[in-house]
Image (cartoon, rainbow, N blue to C red; front, top):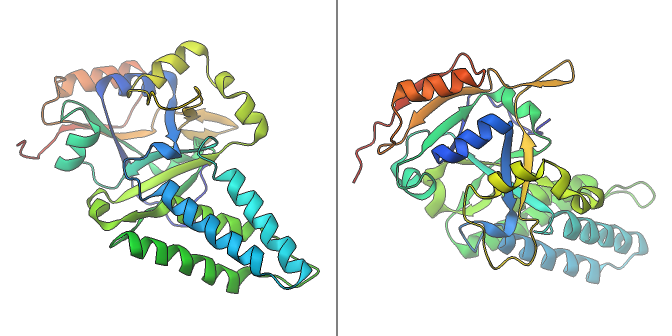
Length: 288
């Protein structure tokens, strides 16, 4: 189940292509991409590096043995779970009809955006976090330092009874949720997932090979990556009696300004795949 510390009261939206929608709907999976493949060099990996610097400083400056042990645990755990090779993301927005996002994420307006109801996130074994937007690179660094300092005050434990887990979770949230303010028009939420060693070793087996091939192809692969562990796939839908029901997961489908589908095409496609209780409309933005 997706974990989040806020009340998700309305649908979240994902921009993509028609081909990607077909794969998402027929496979029952969403694709999460490696965290070092974001579109801004000053977000996830940049924030991770600043947090690692802070943790190494805290560990190096520790004067008591229990503090040194605590910071070493924090450093080792955070470095592992935030490793881009194991840390995967998928992006959503509360905005369902944004001209810049049509251009960036939906094939220049030829694609679609679909909304997932709050309960549809029950199927994800992920953390869902709203993005915090900051003015510039300097303020991102300051935010990281403040997050670490604030968390130190709130979580540094008594000598004989301590856990580093709550502290690391806060740092993971900061890693995922910090971006510069020129992206604030996206009003983004992020799903994040960190694989353990067993999942990392068997990622190719999470879905069948054909689904892996098709879902990996719904955006171009970055040829600079050294291995094929570029994507992770997670099921979405309502949890009912230990099963996942997708029939009411999608609340809405908005066709892009240049989308070749008609509204009837979209309704027929979703209905044939067993989806019910959804709305279909066309974008209201002026394409330019």
